[in-house]
Image 1: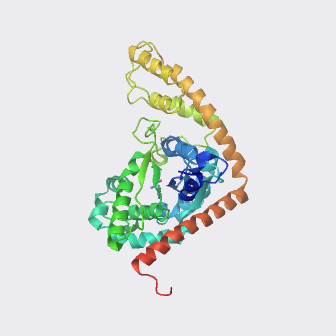
Image 2: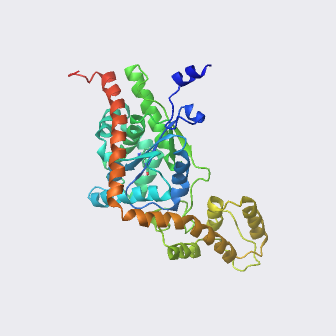
Image 3: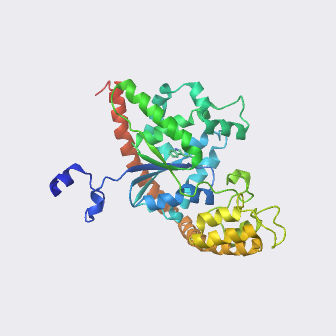
Length: 356
Ligand code: TRP
């Protein structure tokens, strides 16, 4: 292939001086509900991967305020107040607004429109079968009083993804059913208009999987009170490590200890770059003779080092409301252009073009 043909057939990335930029950059979209500041679970589960991905992909990061409202009717203030908090967490963790597009879901009305259109391609019983939704209904005690918007939020999430023609969606394991439902909707829609208007996507799961809560419960979550915020102070970090669940039966240093379900080891797996040393520590712990406090001091040192620059950036940026607003406004504008272009195709495919 001649170099001319290469440049003709590929979309060059932003940095045209770099030959690797002749590859097509995948479109990545992901986001978070804006119900509170993010914690380490988000960092390990997805945020860390996004910081790497932004160099290789055309990445869109969605502040999902509308999705957050689906189970927060009456608490809209909590949702809107946390839009800037989550944006702060993104930037503090290393998201660079010149590489990633940050935007606010509610300010891209095309997403609401696509969501409403896609609603016709799913049945209520299919929505009720989504395992993540079922679990969340149980957790929130909705039982028979399920807000319709909540039951249908997977459709809105599918619209978020499809409107950007995103190919990759970095999410936690619990979001896998959402990706499955997105692809079902995309296929149904395309089949019904007999045209490949929308594209299917793939979940991108994190290497380390889900970080457990400090108490050893399966999931780190702010509402369960077992999380450590990304912006935590040095004292918060120390306290969190000290209260981490290890092994109930590991009472004396000489006793053999259990590694599985041990939160300190789960964190070491997620944060300690010296994996061979961690393996040795695990073997030692299992044999007995290794105290929890040795492990906890090691982990604390690593967490302090990892989190200090994040906290410092977060503090510095939180004084820059104007800058943050500019970043979100510019990102939202860019996001809207992309979504509007897809919606143009969707409307044409459905014949919703009365005034064209
Ligand atoms: N459901 C995600 C969460 O719980 C947030 C979200 C909204 C999202 N729309 C998305 C994630 C689209 C990935 C893609 O935080």
